[in-house]
Amino acid sequence: MNVWSLVDGVLAEEEAGRAGKEKTSWWPSEALGCRRRSFYEWTLPGSIKKPMELTGLYRTKTGNLLHEWFFQQVKNSDYFDTIEEEARVFETDAGLKNPVSGRIDVLGTKGDLVTAIDLKTTYGEGIRRIRARREIPKHYLGQMMVYLKFGGVDEVILAFLGRDDQYRTQVTLTLREDVLYIDGTKTRLTVDSVIDKWKDVERSIEEEAPPDRDFMAAIRNGEIVYKFQRKNVEYKSDWQCRYCPFSQLCYAEELAAHKDSVNEEMFHA
Image (cartoon, rainbow, N blue to C red; front, side, top):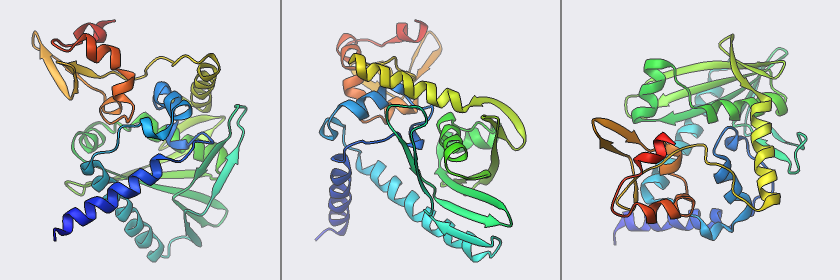
């Protein structure tokens, strides 16, 4: 008996069960994500998706366990008057053809202030960018904007934990006149930037034509790769494409066209 084979099998079964669920609403995690991926999520059966690799399943499970531990530590601090995990579920139409629904990880109150807390566990280049340049992925910020706009919260504490070095940091997000502020500093991100993207996808669904991609994959010899180099220039895949469950479908023509070459020209289009 190999115990890891048993665990691998359970994780794979769990993933297969999730893949068959029908999409009925917009999710906060899709905010400022790729429009074409959202189009596929709405229009294609779950069986079309490329299954998540075991490495990804373990990373997801590890992240979930860290979330549970994190919530318990925040609760044990007794800082908040009340605190709940996955406490607030919301649904709104937001002027879209499909509703927006979500679930907030951790919700705390202190006096009249309602605070949502969301933990992101990351590693490698992701956490290095946050540490060195405070470069927070836009889809995280989009997700938190949805919470602020529709979730009935006053602020969001977006916390980061580096899995490989235990680096810890956070930002506080607020919304003023539908504009996002990070630690009190105004950004260019707005609620409309999220809603407009989703409206664009809904138009594409009606027209039965996939919208433009919002990210780029590096292709070499018929495969999506992390990067390739030409004339001392590196061409890197956006991680959104590398881990997208629809990547083979999305890039089918390009993969065939570059089965013996690279797609350098797509980066200059």
